[in-house]
Image (cartoon, rainbow, N blue to C red; front, side):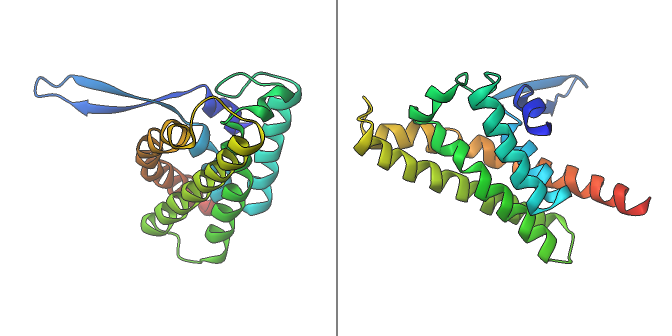
Length: 176
């Protein structure tokens, strides 16, 4: 559920100005992937994986919650490989957080960045297979550029805040 809610929240950077006001720089991304990582960091690999599978099922069969809509036909789009990447990325992020007893910002940031890389690698593999079998209009380099290299830096920027948020929530949960 957290992934679905986070998919509706746009991300931005808030910078303070000299006149004590704030400047908002939109990142043209949402909190969908960080929501996935937050779930995995807090709840572990099983819950993170179940959440990502549930998100895929809801988007494929019930509600158009993906970036480009939804339905079973979404399987034939280039973006679907990145959604498949949610499953191993969630498991990896949760597994690394569960296996390491050191709960700190550096470790959590590494887990989210590593999991983000896994998600994008699976997405690129899907693009390669899709280019061969589905005969998409764009060439492979353009597909990788549009779906990986353009959004990756923005998603990478969100790894640190999600690590900070998960650390705060984890400490809050552990103290009660």
